[in-house]
Image (cartoon, rainbow, N blue to C red; front, side, top):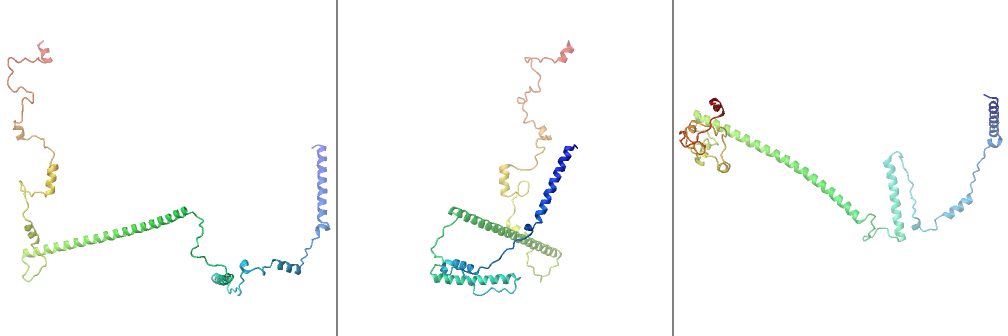
Length: 289
């Protein structure tokens, strides 16, 4: 570090020390340490004059609309929210009753007339949209409830149907078992004259006899019903489709369907003299040569 730089730093240090000393002396001076005392003066006369100026005693009550409760508010249990709110409600209710009396006394209308129509803040189109939206919501709720009711009815109806089907099956099974038992006892001759049965043993045979004999075809088998016969006449018969074009001994020996002209053949006779001789094949010509 050069000498000039050292001299510059020493001068700055001296200046800083002087400023610090001056600040300390200023803080410790009597003017800074002394505190200004505030004077509180109660000018009763001036305050009374101001209160009389702003007082509203000379103004009618209908313009002031102020009510002071005659009874003080006394809350026994401040921590009890219900009791505290009830006291506030009672005080407000008394003030409302007193205010209504004062308004009627002043001759000012208190209640709204029946034919009074206030101007709406919202437009009629906006209110119509809101009404339509509410109606749509109500309709959707009704549709949901109706769908739920229908689902419950379907479940209940399905349950009843299953119970009825099961009951019929049980009755049918019991009747068949009883019929089988009676038939068995009839065959064995174990039924006496005093036995009383509420089921006719030959009911099945009687019903078949009453319905008449079933029609049979040429092969001795019973014919199908009319619906099946109509379908067979329209669409043909079912049955076996395989090996329908397979030759048998009878079809092979039967030559009635054979045609010489159709098969382009001269038959089994020898060629005539006028017929032109065919040219021999290549292999035969090579052997001749």
